[in-house]
Image (cartoon, rainbow, N blue to C red; front, top):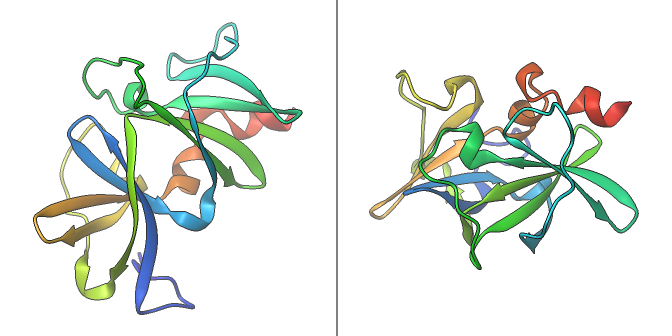
Length: 159
């Protein structure tokens, strides 16, 4: 799997967010906006990681808590909890994270292939690892994750 964009072999621009003690990066071009966490409307029989939906300027947007999806510790909602609104597969989806740290550009020299290991996050969704000084950033293929069958989001919002 290619780590760098085909049209840009020099670098990758990422939005970096925290889940527990780890930092994750997603393609900045998938991000529509970042909002504070607000109450959501629960949906009956939804998986536990789908918190519900919100009305975002007339659009009904499903909200996924990645901390629950990835089994990351105790999930608490506080003033730092944010929702990243994404555009993936022609859909708008929100993800709940512990906080957003920054936007950064990683060069190809800073990108490494993901090691083969068992983890709570299926490695099929990991593009690789980015290193910046002492920081290690897990690069997530957010579109592949959000459109995966176990998320049940594409069918849910397509109906």
